[in-house]
Image: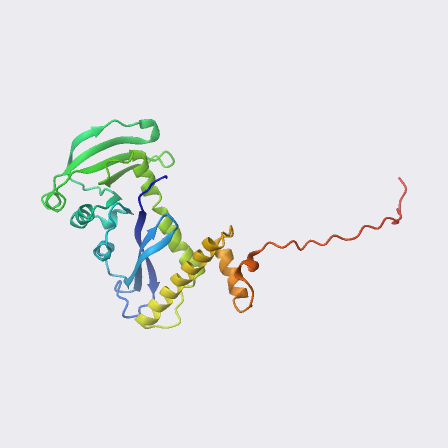
Length: 272
């Protein structure tokens, strides 16, 4: 999507821990865990904000720690719906895109024309009707109904951005999947499932170290204009980290093929 706005995806991932070894990481009665709340800049899949908490912290409280950027678009799932906090984003000049909950109480104010062939069923301006929600978010909201052609499911999006096309809003929410891929990459390749220490400081230090490694690899890939994946770069650097060579030469594609000399006087064993 060709947008001039900054686009961020906000989400969290849970890292399970053993309760008998990590009793400080409160989560459930039988399990401990920590949460990594992440604001991912979708222009380069680089985290711009991270907070590590215990497993009991609700996702919506991460909104209180953000400093809203005017003009930026924040994409988040339904776990972050708190209309008072969303109204604070709106007042700061920022935009948000999220999915509506099933118990949404609202009435339609205006309906815009839509192209149903694109999957957009309805593009409406709504006003909240709940006793509490109408006071928490007095302005109008934009509600978009979209039918996914792949799963045939109907999705309902809420946003305060009125200028972008409805299909662009739907694609913005679809891009939120990048933060899930970021969590998957971090857990698979940077070894934050097993911890070297059991204290809170040791666990957070290991998580932050893993994130610093991710950022450094991403910077190297960008600065050297490399086509290799982040995982490939990580493997190459891990085996050449103590070698005194230029970093770029470690990623050069060398031709190791060996051309055997041709023998002109070789005889044939069989006559055809």
